[in-house]
Image (cartoon, rainbow, N blue to C red; front, side, top):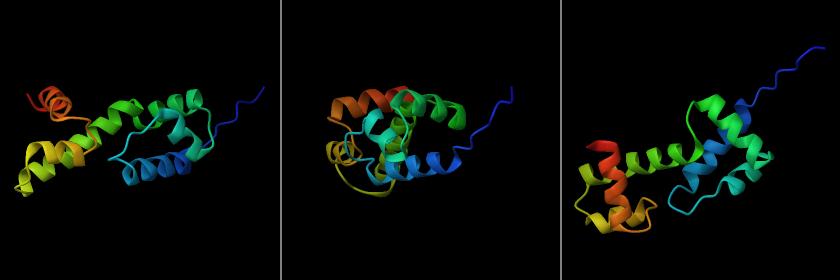
Length: 102
């Protein structure tokens, strides 16, 4: 029996584009999987295999990268940066910031 390899590159690119476009909103695994036409369980496996990281970890990394740019290049208040970057509060942002940078 021959194993057929499926190329999910286009699906993952569509998922990454969707994440970037909606990074500042609450995102769910099911919502992103629906955008590429896969079940959430299959999408999660493919995402991990293709990008070598979990979906939620990837989203948090992207949010932190955007927040870091704002911290460095603006005079915005931290609470504003946190909310603009998709975090629910300044406290949530502070927790993730410490996990990533300290």
